[in-house]
Image 1 (cartoon, rainbow, N blue to C red):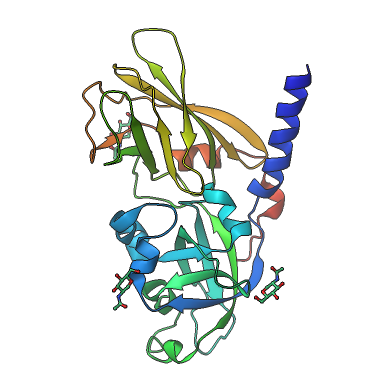
Image 2: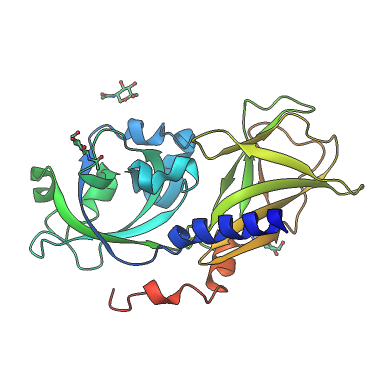
Length: 263
Ligand SMILES: *[C@@H]1O[C@H](CO)[C@@H](O)[C@H](O)[C@H]1NC(C)=O
Ligand SMILES: *[C@@H]1O[C@H](CO)[C@@H](O)[C@H](O)[C@H]1NC(C)=O
Ligand SMILES: *[C@@H]1O[C@H](CO)[C@@H](O)[C@H](O)[C@H]1NC(C)=O
């Protein structure tokens, strides 16, 4: 009972911020050296340059949430109508921004440039900061399933470290369990502090099914992979888990009140 209540309160508390679809007003700036973003705190490495065509962002600690928000997507537009397009651009969070609290998100040059309207891509770089509004959105990968990438730091047979790719953007991953296909036990992974990496020192020598506790809107739910990661997994490989997180996020109806229809 006590434990149940604790868990309930935990999910209610964490979901209040997971339902984060309202518009936020802030300033933004760009980072001139993109490699600082691609080698960002989330730990995606150069892989990040392939996400959303390199439209990367670093978030302040309140957005970054110790790595829980790694892979989250945002739509941002600037308020200067002469300089910027009305639709703005999509971003993906890959880094933590500790240098300033004046900008919620700082952007890669490519993302900053994408805020500009036609003909203004040169002029926008004359500005060091821009007033912007932004909101969290689904990432909408072109039909890509949720996948795991096995980290090079993994050491067979028992140390497995992974990152999740194509996680959908509006779902936060809270827990990761491994279930061997052939026997009924559960192995628990833990998040490497402050990053998008999950790891375990006691991985079973077996094909495993990934099971994720995610939070989307106000609801916590379990997502079970439809495809296994084989026993002969290898560092550097990416395995398709056969489920789509965007579909799951859209299925949640409880987070509508923040959805501002006009943009
Ligand atoms: C960009 O940053 C990376 C890592 O922080 C550094 O190795 C590289 O020299 C920098 N490049 C430039 C052009 O400043
Ligand atoms: C923001 O940064 C300024 C200067 O670094 C600091 O004085 C201020 O306390 C910070 N505010 C918050 C809310 O962290
Ligand atoms: C995603 O997973 C489903 C179910 O396993 C599969 O049918 C589909 O081909 C996968 N999509 C991609 C892009 O691999």
